[in-house]
Length: 394
Image: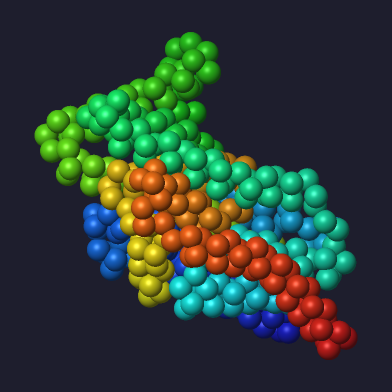
């Protein structure tokens, strides 16, 4: 029998989770996906906020399971987060993200949530999960180099005279199509599991599973590349804008799938006691992301699209392609990752492809310091906060 005090505490934790979801929707998943497109004048700020909310909600429901389980169960061993611990961790992380939103600096949400969850988990007497931490830190360190480097190389290729843009852009679209064919969705898998389009179609084709999967991947890539090549032949500038908006949509969807786990992950283990299905938790978190995107994202979209680097369509495309790929890698491995880190790194990399035109070095330094500081501060505040509250409740 669940007591009234337990129910009340879980409700408070649920409100904290919704506040966290709103903060993420307003600051990370809501602002970053379409920021390059807004910077390239392909879409208005308010329209970008509207679409990113819808797509982020869809991504949260269809792809949010992996990161949610990682944040809720894999960061601390030996204990399950209590309602009090989840509430403290979520409130600390959400407050830091909200401060970043109103200050105009994109706080790395994954840093604050990870630091806060580890902080309250250790304060409860849990043991560190160093294997998972190694995975997380490795991805966090690689993101600026892989994302920024890929964006730089792609932007340079699009700007150079050696490569014909009329066929280079369709090739890039084909690469995106190949990734998309292997993105896992809940709707394509058996009950309780996810599967990609390639994996779902391959068993019905002759030959080995591997060959069939590769064949489906190449077919999807070729179809998308040919479609964009036809569009480019009609109107190159318009085709670039449409490709840029499609990339923004894919990144927005991926942001929802990745970021919802940061909001509802600490809460999910608590709700198992009430037999609440995970999909219902993801829907609630997705709605929080949507409201945050609609009400708070425009400010951060402006900051990302204008303050870090002045981007045209080519550099915006170069920034979004690695962002989409990195986000899907993180979702596949169940690693909490900051979309602010992904997008900012890619924007800066593509900006340097034009000789650093419009890149604000001061803004870059302050942002990196905010990221590192938020990780340490969230850990400290969550650890001390839970220790104090736990002592008062004894």
